[in-house]
Amino acid sequence: MNNAVCRLTGAEFPLFAFSHCRDVVAAVSKAGGFGVLGATRFSPEQLEEELAWIDAHVDGAPYGVDVLVPETIDPRVAGFTDNRARAAAIDPKYPEFAAGILSQYGIEASAEVPQMRERMGITPENGLALMEVAFRHPIRLIANALGIAPPEMLAEGKRRGVPVAALVGAKEHALRQAEAGVDIIVAQGTEAGGHCGEVSTLVLIPEVVRALGQAGYDTPVLAAGGIMTGGQMAAMMAAGAQGAWTGSVWLATPEAETSEAFRDKMIAARSRDTVRSRSRTGKPARQLRTAWHEAWDAADGPGTLPMPLMGMVSEPSFAKIERAAEAGNPRARELVSYFVGQGVGLIEEVRPARAVVQSFREEFVEAVERLTATFD
Image 1 (tube, rainbow, N blue to C red):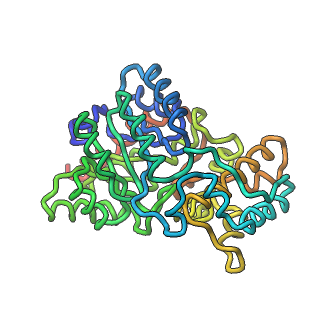
Image 2 (tube, one colour):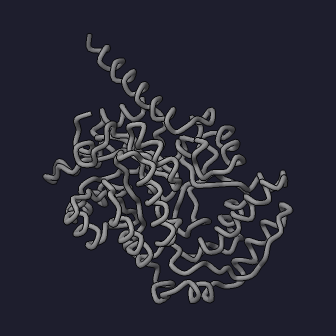
């Protein structure tokens, strides 16, 4: 396709697939889409291994990397420089509360303050370290979320000819990113899995496209949030987007990092079964709703910690939930959750990533043909 994001990134078809799994990234890019590896779960050393693997398995197809370099830091954690200090600052009532939830479901849990490896977690310094690793590889895109793309990323992207993308959830955020000099805006609606704002994709895309045009920017926009089909992708492009940025649809592929238990829950879930909650990362993020979220978000709960402290409590707990579910604890399956958008209601089966790309292509063409036929 001949559009702005394809020219910038080398993508054959402007279907961008965000995934934490290298297998999904490689499969999508080789199928003509554009895989984007979410780097936040890795240390710099681990990311180096992941990208080296992709380089060896992507057959020269273009791919990108997504990092998180938060623009603003909660004052409660701004003074910490390592995970040991962060862990020491966590009030014991938080891991005790988490352990209490798990014990109700027959999951062995400890109320000890969690310990996270150094150079792990969503912090500005960790994000910049991951960025440096990414730029050592032949990436064709680097993306940032949780604020304005850092100057270091913009400068290095320009020097290397690598487009910089930024995720936004409101038109004013898009204008700030365009002013900063990003190459691609990913406008993500509240339907999306993971961190998201409050405006729906259907409203956000034309709003952002219009605002950018009125301000004199020609920055291309990718639509994100709830997009699970080629028809939806075509609709967003009719509204002014240059392509689609997708995430949740890839969680229901055998290549994904998700467990069988979670994929089963995806197939059974309705779009109303997700919740936008701070109870996993400390910032609003959409995920599959369970009793974990209801407990943390309840009026009589302890409240949530700021990022990255909340993740230091929640991630060890969810790892224990997954292990218990895999070991055959049926109640643990009730707590199995992950970041997923409202489009989960459109998931009907587990399909290989390559098949998902092909379906997007076919459905996109069918949607365009239906629209064109209305003018015959």
